[in-house]
Image (tube, rainbow, N blue to C red; front, side, top):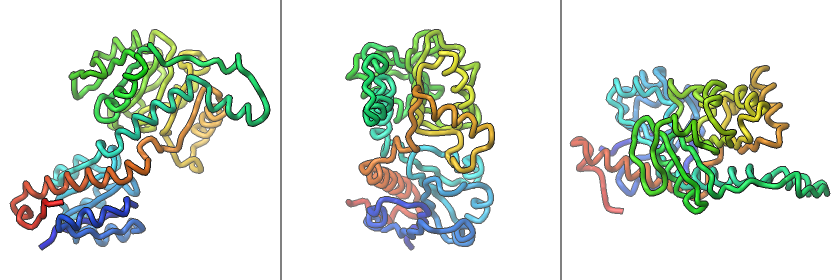
Length: 323
């Protein structure tokens, strides 16, 4: 009997062939509705998701055969991890698949911010030629603080090595440095960082971690980059610290509410202020969203799924490992 996996989000077209190569049955249903998911999930041993819908207790209660959830990407905040672990469901994600994309995006946004690229482009298109007003700040030689030194933080640090930056990093799960960053306690980041880049998952203790009190701890005014999760940064606090000069500029790939047509009145007011600021640049959650990462995520996930199944006596003999 083949291992059956239900795929409920859009994936690179290679996913079905990659799975079938290992004798894994893939049911590709990117247009499935939540009621349909609830009705069908009990028939599958595996589930592959992006961020289409919350995999919460309602779903997991119906998933009586489920052994594996494969997240196409890095973030796991839409999966009820505690409940899944209670049901002995293995969780797999693929940060290796889009870490290079995130590293490049963070560098690109930071350079665009510090060199006033977006603002001056709009001005020139309007036949406004302002050289002095758009004088940039060099990345070379700056002290860059990274919070979260996993796949994404390390990919960003690796690219910073070309700019002669001193990179210091804090990660609550690890204190291991490498050739690209020296791991430190948070106090050193507060004391020395001139640039702050966020690469942390959304968890209970990181929700709105970056608030007014957090930003007030920095000794120097900072540039801030967030390519992680929107809800780790309180946008009202960012707006306040931009006004005070505590934050010199912000590059935001993610927002606390990315459904811009469903903002609360308070969120709408803050977003309007930020969107009018020349000190802020936005992108629509695309840091890990490249043509290359779209396929690489498939490859990483399938390799991890095969590795997991090979360790399970029930499935090991039915899984083909040749590629």
